[in-house]
Amino acid sequence: MAAQPYIDRFIERWQQSSSSERANYQLFLSELCDVLEVERPQPKRENDQDNTYVFERGVTFHHADGHTSSGRIDLYKRSHFVLEAKQGSSPTLETPLFGTAPAPAHRKGVRRDTRAWDEAMMKARAQAERYVRALPRDEGRPPFIVVVDVGYSLELYSEFSRTGGTYVPYPTTARRRILVQDLIDEGAREVLRKVWTDPLSLDPTKHSARVTRDLAKDLATLARSLELSGEEPGRVAGFLLRAIFTMFAEDIGLLPKGAFRNLLEDLRGNTVHLPHHLTALWQVMNTGGYSTDLRRMLLEFNGGLFTDSYVPPIDERQLELLIEAARADWREVEPAIFGTLLERALDPAERHRLGAHYTPRAYVERLILPTVIEPLREDWEAANAAAANLLSKGNRNAALLELETFHKKLCTTRVLDPACGTGNFLYVTLEHLKRLEGEVLEVIVSLSKDERERLELEGITVTPEQLLGIEINPRAAKIAELVLWIGYLQWHFRTKGNVLPQEPVIRDFRNIERRDALLTYDGVETVVDAQGQPVTRWDGRTTKLHPVTGRKVPDESARVEEVRYVNPRKATWPKADFVVGNPPFLGAGPMRQALGHGYAEAIRRTYDDVPE
Image 1 (cartoon, rainbow, N blue to C red):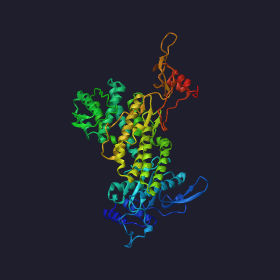
Image 2: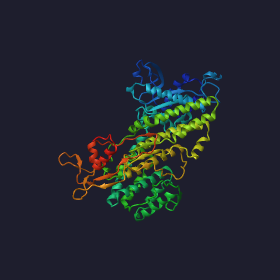
Image 3: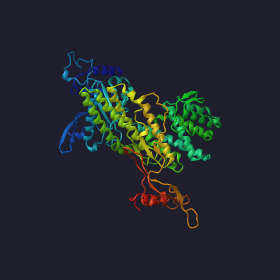
Image 4: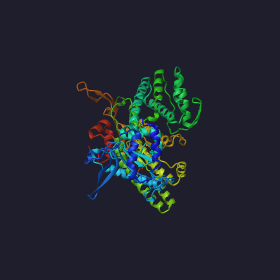
């Protein structure tokens, strides 16, 4: 570990800097490497392909008209980061780093913590993004951009998928900036050390994905145990969704710390009374008020989740599974995959697939970012530039109006997934909308510190209401709603600390519609044969192992009745600005086999372009 006196001298020395970036930045970054106990940049070589960790790494820009131009990255480390350095000035600082004479005015940067300084840092970030795009394709994109104000701060932006997505403030807009004086703290140094040595380890989804997979396995065990006790799978799922949210609420700070887990532990040896206690607790959470079980006033949660407070009989073994789940840190759940895993855990027919492949977050972002977020970011950059122009002319109110107009647009943007499943595409969209909103609010607050409070009081913010879904599976639809609220509340506490959200904590926006996305109809009729007996077919999902090949094949003993759809017609979709998703695909033959002749015929009569 770097000696504390050395760190103290580094901080004191560089807080006095006021010269130009070119005079100081290489020395500053080299000494920073010593503080972080990482290797200093290497000498440059003639061939840029060999320059994996150097100052002044050359890149070539390829322009639309065919010509090229050159640029140099201030500090580059392949597969780690692109760093762009600037230097601002402190209002109270009048001397250069070495000496006592006043610094020449033309050498000083823009005043720190001003609107002009914010703009300079944003321009530096944009320049770093251009350097990233100019890197040779075979080098890949680094997961981090670092923007440095020499001697003052380092700002971090991440893009962990490394697929060409947008770099976003890391870990959040409010916490992206590490000041030089923060380096006194080992935690701040460790974050930067990992940026220099192991940047992908900072991806929060890697740890949370492991936590989420483990929790899903435990919940699957509990769900199966309750079903073997005779409970109907749908009621088991409803009970576990309420229990899951209660555990999450406890860990995130919406309930007293440890209260729910302690209640469960106190009921050991007395499980006969557990349904009464949990039912009473959830009834209070639904409406808000005093809980005799927790001996506290509780917030009103509402949102439809606790309207049904059914609790099945629980034995001692099942109680231990609940307690084990409650011991986990539910703040670490990754909503982007939690929905898929939870659906598999709660669905008896899908439980065997719990360890199977699921759509990773990076794949979701490959669709979400170019479809939704990048167009919105282009609009934001245009609005921000227009505001800066107005501000340069002294028209502060007009600049603020320009920014607020975009913010209101962002908070009314509606995104639809017409086959949303358990909501992973919607959740990832929500997270990126909240990230963008954080950047917008930061600029608004830089012009008017009262605006954030006013906007929040008026309820002008990105919420789950903007994320619309259609899902035919009622259990998946409920999980999608839960995933969106868990993700939204995670973001709330991550960015606002211990500030409680407004009541009701969760709201029934009815943004996830439980219906068919393709057809609407007046009813269904059972198809009968010549003898008046119902015609049946394979249920489309139950399988068995082939006795010879060992492969899974349809289990023809699993039958459902064939139906005819009365007056089928195209389903309408809610109005939305963007449509996203990854709907399931079935070919002509598999569609008839999986969904039935009646549904296949209704689809073909309604949509002319569906093949036979």
